[in-house]
Image 1 (cartoon, rainbow, N blue to C red):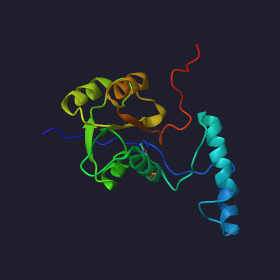
Image 2 (image 1 turned 30 degrees about the vertical axis):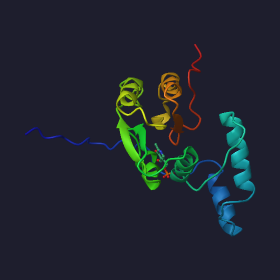
Image 3 (image 1 turned 90 degrees about the vertical axis):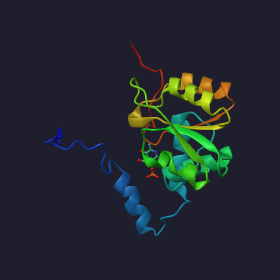
Image 4 (image 1 turned 180 degrees about the horizontal axis):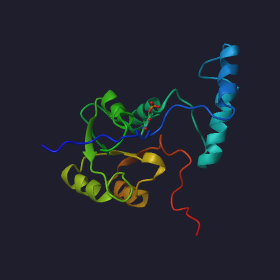
Amino acid sequence: MKTIKPFEKKIWLSSPTMHGKEIEFVTDAIDKNWVTTAGENINDVEDTITKIVGCKYAVGLSCGTSALHLCMKLAGVKPEDLVFTSDTTFDATVNPITYEGGVPVFIDTEYDTWNMDPVALEKAFEIYPQVKVVVVANLYGTPAKLDEIVAICKKHGAILIEDAAESLGATYKCLQS
Ligand SMILES: Cc1ncc(COP(=O)(O)O)c(C=O)c1O
């Protein structure tokens, strides 16, 4: 049997760190006894996000899982509904589907982006044409092939939810030469 040798040096995907003013804001919130879901810092974050992302509204929630759970509710996922989702991702992409009683159907990952394969997605719609919700993760700051995925979702009348927890600030087709 072939033995797999572990890497000698561990390469961390990410580790919790605080930079710049973050520690000041955290300390300030604790000092003021105001660790909660409302307040000036939340308003500022929401406002800043709308500017960075270029959208009208932003809502600050406790974590990415909550945001994705809210998306499932807004998309109307009901018990027994099949939902297409990325097969290579953090479990928070998938868990909220099951919180609403939905059944995840995993779509293969492709080589170019390490994200959902549009070819596999189209194939999945041939097998399960009833699916109305697709959840795609954009991993490691790299967007999936969104033009293709959006076109497929439109063709099949499905709502597309993007999990950008690892890609806030990433750009799509914006490379300058
Ligand atoms: C792809 C992906 N989706 C969602 C999340 C949200 O996770 P959390 O609920 O821990 O904020 C993460 C966090 O690492 C993630 O990597």
